[in-house]
Length: 145
Image (cartoon, rainbow, N blue to C red; front, side, top):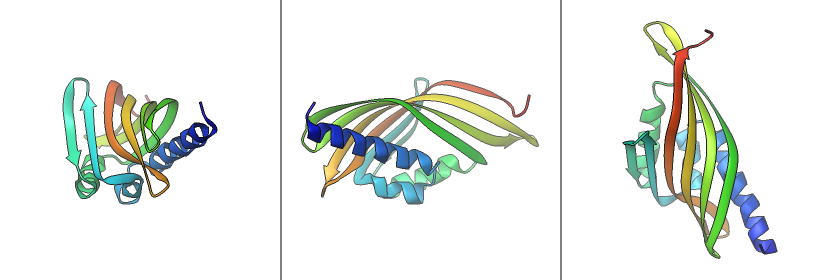
């Protein structure tokens, strides 16, 4: 791995961390995506969301997050491969915990996710050009039980 790849890897990891730290705030997150972003969410084998373009991203994520009262993200293993000087792919494993309300009770859903990402460097800055988020394990229960 070249010194440039090491620096780019750290920049991409920081980018992904910034997105996660915004915990579903699409209006702020959108600055970390390309204008032509392709974003999909799968729960198991079912495609729940398929978004093309940054304006659709903001609307769709706001809608997706509208029932969630509180959220917490944590990123884990992140493997990045460089396809070209300005293009990379990534496989990111993370965990998202969502708190919702159902029938007057707070529910907690613990999601284990892997994201297949495409990153593009534009004007010296890495952005997410594509993301397929796969929610492959979810556990839902009454909070505090």
